[in-house]
Length: 511
Image (cartoon, rainbow, N blue to C red; front, side):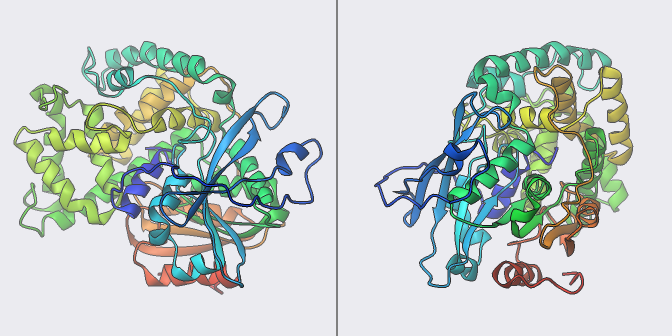
């Protein structure tokens, strides 16, 4: 799993499997006051007035913001960005706190509507308007569209003609990914080439302006840290109080990112197994290494056993990888992982498919709640650099197998292989390239990392904090993806003090 698509897991960890909500029950309220200063040629966007409307749940207000499809060519058409806020009525209001859960594909609207009280403290909600938005291509904003539900089901869950992982299977993926890319181009149009990280960062500055804030206060998780870092690079003077949690190293190439991340999942799975062996419900026995060997045997038998669920779907090795990654984001989900593996040993793939469905936004009736897979693919292709053929795909698979011998290959079958081959055949070239981001002139930026984060390895937080000229590393020692609002009082108080007062720790508190 690239740090893209991580927002889904983050939302599940943070929100506790809450369902999506809709922007309903709206009534007109007074518009905001348009900001005075606008970049030349962008006045119509920066000076727009927002009509906030009451929406669900109670206390929330919703609106849309108009942005150009292409920031370099603002006359070439517009898109709409869905925005929600939980407004503060405090006389000591500090401004807006923009939030993003990650992605690409993560809905900031859903994050705020469903989890504002889980991911922000009472003190933050008192002093800030908590604001979430659906990035371009996502959710209720102008969407990326690729396949209908039936075609997406076949794309994600179809049984391949050749054994997964074989050279014949890799060759089989080329036509499959070419068809996917072509469908995305046909059904999305020009937006498909403009959902890169820098376009989103420019959207963030537009949001800052139309919300009436001189500087941007921002809390970004996972891939949302890329939004924040690129924002700081483009608009260093506009950076206010910025927290980047579960940071990504912007200098790494795509193959390096995927390989490091699979190593993170391997470390998380080893930690899970070690803990599992102390419980009565563990599906494995013996030492940690013996249990890992048992897991390897179990995973390798998946396709040959032909495990079929009641709905007729067969569990493939790629789907198993998605199912394994899903509960590894959060230590609290380890018991559910044990239950899934116990049932898998008994020949029942139902729970594994349910986990994969949750990750892929698939509903029990076979419909899809959103286009997160499409957004993930499109934005990752625009933000990354990829090999020129199957030789490169295979080489990275070999690196992943060395870094993550138990789970790496399985997670990568539905992730790295899909992304690398799709991006080799994508209809738009990359918009950015990996590079260190220094953001000279920006105010202090807190960079949070968790020591055994399976999805964004701790080394990435160290790298981002060292690259940013004003980066300040804050360490959470423990398991799971991201650090803030995970029950660590040291982390939460450090972040809150910074956002509320601007106080920066003299040294890493090592929470």
